[in-house]
Length: 310
Length: 303
Image (cartoon, rainbow over all chains, first blue to last red):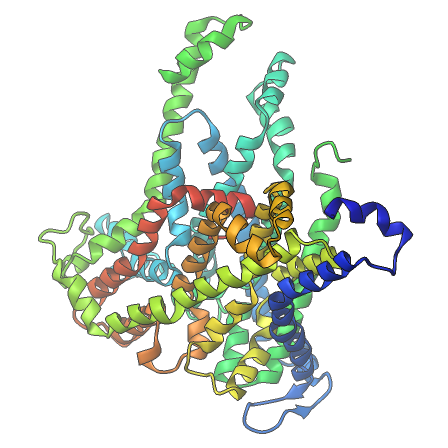
């Protein structure tokens, strides 16, 4: 029956057979859990959040409509908003590209003819799946100025200690380093993509006299660009929403130098109970993420290679 | 050595002198392994430090240069840290109140929804599937505040309901993953069952489910991983210490043991407990490595 419906489609548009009608109902029934969830957990909250963004609401008294005041105040008179935006863009624009670059290089290294590839891959990957709370505790301790291991080594050489997380100039780069350390899943994804590159292409390139660099630049990279695009988009979306690691490592400090967007949003919502302001911030974040994704996809035609499809 | 012997059959066209090439290869080979060991060391060291710090006492922690191999080893820290707060209860909460229900609900709902997207032909299917995929891009912060208010009105604050009940409505990642998997199962199989009079419901549970095990393993692993590691969800919804899952309990221990001036054995206890909480994940990864790697390479799921 699945085959039979296709040719009929054009002819009898409105009139479904009994079988088709049955399938229509069954299909909707089967996806109804998701559809219900989509309405209750996504669509309605999305609309509510837009509405709350236009109100002042502290959970105790009723929401009071104030128009675009939340947005206006965020953009013009909130002292923290632009700091938070700056911190977040610093973190995202440094962390995601550098993270992708490092992950891609490691994946290429693992893709060469080496022994123990699976073991090295596991070692790189495991930090990415260990609970963030645990890794945050270790990094806090490792980077501690008083008795952290890294500063302990520096002290042993009688070098000055480095205040990784407690100085405003180093706190952001340190967070980025820890972010890169946790990019093991990107390495696994890139490695899988590299192993999918057909051997025949490399052999053909060798016959044409290509050296290792030519092969990397003209075969490996183009064939991996779809995966790089996909992974970078997900990376940007994830990094804009980063919360747990920086929250545990610095709590936004020192002097708000690591207060990222979602940390500020969380604070506004659940510490200050400014639900209206937090909702407005959430919508701004949504717009930023959509814009970023759109920009990446719209430029992708220029640098992403889609096999024989184009 | 192996690189040389493996490339040997292919070097027929190669006219460069063999010894020069092999020396170059040997040098890059050594450099490669040096780099690999350096990377492995960097990536592994924090975890090594977590375990070994858990075995130290306070004086070993303050020693300069840092103690690489704790001696003597204080294994009792693992008990001491665990008992500092009610980590038994937190483990119970993490497993039975949070992870297991979420995993079970996710499997159940995602399987049903994925079947509807993959195996039944109906009008609007592609549109709704596209919508489902699109919701993956929706930052959860946008729905965080309204959902909190909704759940608060239900009286669900300080319970696991806001964290567990949404799993009944399927999860886009796993719906996607299972749908892709269902599409690889030949239609003839379901066709034959339909001829025999099987219902769609029966086909899903009796015919397809047994074939879906590899994909289900991926769902179980990642769903478990995400709930086990989840920090923000419990932070928003749970108030009482008795309700805390492991992640929040570690945070609590850190807050009381180190933030307000160090108490005795603060770091060894913290590291010991972190080790215990990280260990199940590492063990599961080692046991189910193939499913993990397949899962992330198949869907690009983040760990």
